[in-house]
Image (cartoon, rainbow, N blue to C red; front, top):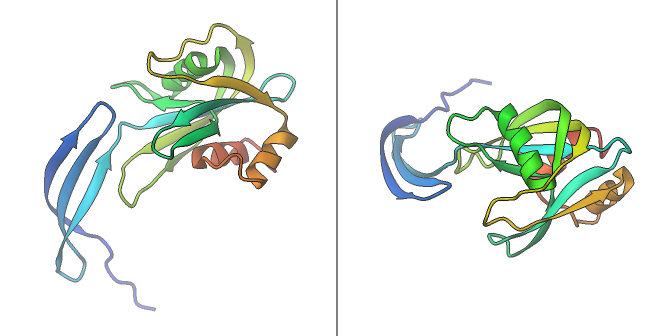
Length: 179
């Protein structure tokens, strides 16, 4: 089968909105067939997500309200990269802020492009081990509960639809929690 050129040629970009977390832009492109098109793109600084595993094998999850979907979600701790911050540094910071745990071992599992159809967001996923409890100190506008679950309970919550967050499911799978 003959391979065709699939790449679009960038023409110009117009910023539509710039907020605290993201920027929306409208890009003009030329399609492989030569026709013009527009692409709505959400720029995101990137984020990390962490699968914290206690010495007893329990998984640390956070429960928080997510306005965009209008409900409480059970997720692995996660957070946005600050300007110039490495994913590893961010993972350690976010773990402590959201859960009150620090990790002696922080291992990178993968990086995922969350919604490449309209966003450039990349989430770097880690597993954290050898946890030590400290003080939880979430951001001023962040409200969450820290909850510990067995591997069996986590597997059941994914199966029954209690856990639906994509980064959480990917992280748990790669950490071997759901296998």
